[in-house]
Length: 126
Image 1: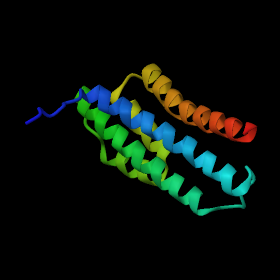
Image 2 (image 1 turned 90 degrees about the horizontal axis):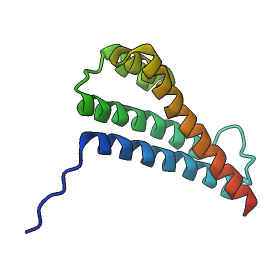
Image 3 (image 1 turned 45 degrees about the horizontal axis):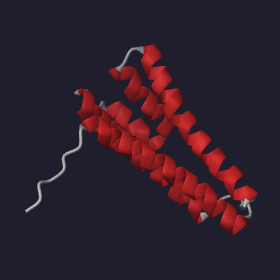
Image 4 (image 1 turned 30 degrees about the vertical axis):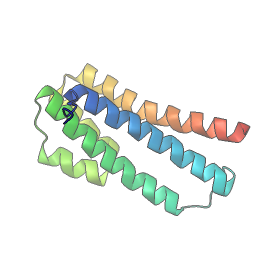
């Protein structure tokens, strides 16, 4: 019988973020494969990406609150589902001082933008 591996809460939070970045990058690769980087106005991949971003942001907030003992507000939960960047900003501002909240928020969405851009540039070069 093998012992269960238990990961620290911060490891799980960071793993959720890493999978989120991979998810965003994979979506960009799919856009390039199927639409040569110029998709029509909206595709199934866009809808899946939008739903995935909401799900990953919610899971990241859950793991972050477990890691640091924060509580998630109802307003933050609702805004995360309705408008994900604003909901994440509400959560971060409620749980941290504003400079740290802003830095984490910019890092979260900036990382997603960089993952998408890197995947797009790599897919174009192939």
